[in-house]
Image (tube, rainbow, N blue to C red; front, side, top):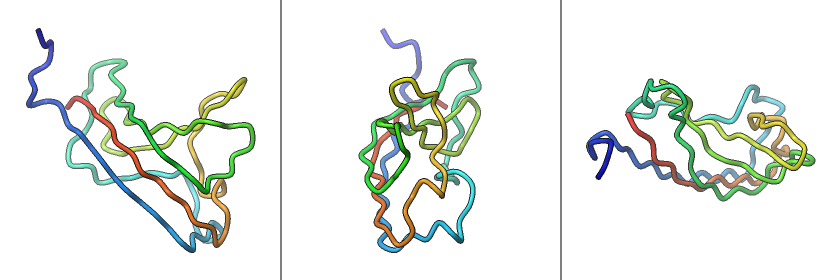
Length: 110
């Protein structure tokens, strides 16, 4: 049995590649905004997916996971590592003039 109607499940896929990203003119966190449906407002129902990434230089962080928070319509990349608290990837975590890859998928409930 399925506790959620299938019509409320949204699958997202993306592939972003930059060849000359310049973080000196960018600020804030790495986000994909403008998603067509906001995540569910149900407490603790966070959308989490899988992610291939390259070009992010965040010392002591070994994992990057795409996340959509409760009631949000913005996808954020959170980094974590052994003994590290999860934190959003910032523009400064990407090298100037470097290539950044972000290829992933995420399923969430609306």
